[in-house]
Length: 429
Ligand code: HAM
Image (tube, rainbow, N blue to C red; front, side, top):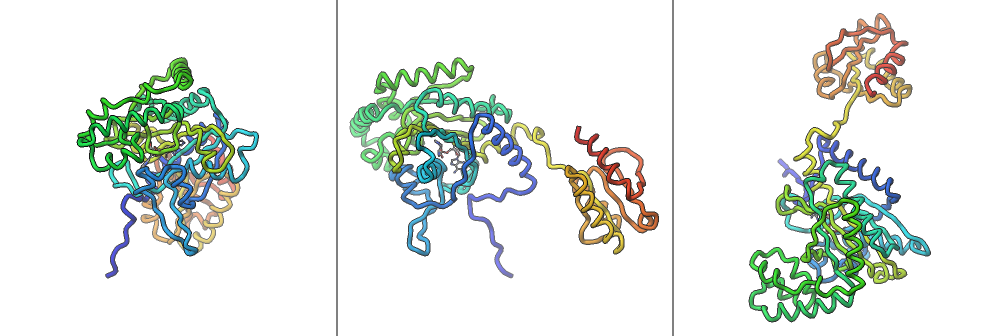
């Protein structure tokens, strides 16, 4: 017997029974993005490795250990995209979308990171992301948070998440903070773990992001970036906080929030839930004013976020299992006998053409009445159209109500369209 093939660890099949959640989520996301004036962009799943190394940062977990990188047949180093911002910016530069104009963009699709799989952390996962390119102010930062808050509200999750924000300040304030951090951690080098020692020179800010409980106290007493913010960055951040307060959006300032990608400057934020265990960040983002110039575009301020869709769906399934409408089928056509099948298949096709809202399944693969009724029931259809020998002889079609107490009907075939049309109107009010 040949061995059974399975999916790659950390990469999930999304089965039909879960699709209603995905469709519903995607519909809400599209609707909201449109309402805020954002346009969709789709970029390739594979990019040159250099794009991610230059944007996310050489000394980040993602680039150092999590990318799916390979040489293609031309010996070019390519990577499956581990996030969407770099691709979005690359596309905007490449197609001249930033010449004397701003862009409000969104995307939805799979990302790939070779992380250790666990609940809420996968090697292929989906993000809904938003990027606003060309806006320098606190106004657009507030807009990012308004959009995320509106999404979470539309999904009924607003009471299950909290908003954390921080400001990473300007390049000068980060440089001053960095020196203070290096001095502090060097002084306590004996307490650091291996990863943190390595980061001490390359990326000391990331030590603050360490999940190692042994470092918790040391990190808590480390110099905070907030103490190094320039007056300008302070004022900018204060305005954002004021806008959030004015809009009635509660938030917590978390000075330890530094994010795992190097391109951030200024404000960063995360929406976090306690309901999913260790992987509780459902949405995260921030400002990245230097990235576009670093990737060869015109100096352009930018801000964005991405939402982890698996985590959102896990929350929805846990908290609102009945909120999402299941996919429904209106009718199932039962046809018994060769002649009935031939006439029935064509009739169902005529019904589909005449009634664009009708969802109807034809019984394919034969079977007696009993087995076809079983399939009709399993399909979830509300009614069965029945075409057997009796109906053929009388040029009729029977309609049986599968979910409600109602007498079976016998209609002449020419009346079926008008009957179903009225029935659909009643059904979908
Ligand atoms: P990120 O924090 O790396 O940011 O990812 C954003 C969200 O994607 C996370 O908060 C989480 O919900 C989800 N996520 C990340 N990794 C995984 C995983 N392995 N499994 C499941 N879900 C995951 C970014 O990707 C930035 N590009 C966000 C951004 C856009 N910043 C500015 N614009």
